[in-house]
Image (cartoon, one colour):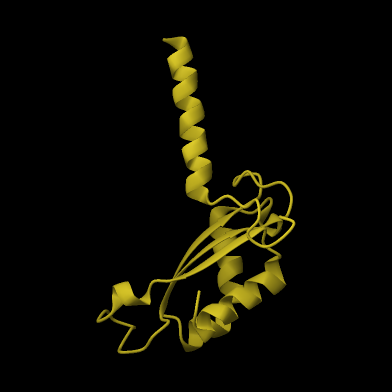
Length: 126
């Protein structure tokens, strides 16, 4: 996250959804020359967010909630937004970190742990 649009996205999501984990990833460089980029920067983003605000919501409702929070950016500047929105339970986060970035696992880390546990269980059966 570097530019003003990425910072605005992070600020709004932090204010509205109080995430335990938030990554705003600018993927614009990978889309240079595609429709919607047209020589502009900060047009394509991926948001990975973990928030208790998503408890009880479907995946589609979560994505809509994120899009609602970012409506101005989507209308004015952002061409494409990819969203991964999870609850703390889904991401194995039960309390907020003491400091930003402390004790926060990414989704790949959680998946890797799950796969290790599954392999160990299978090895014990064999």
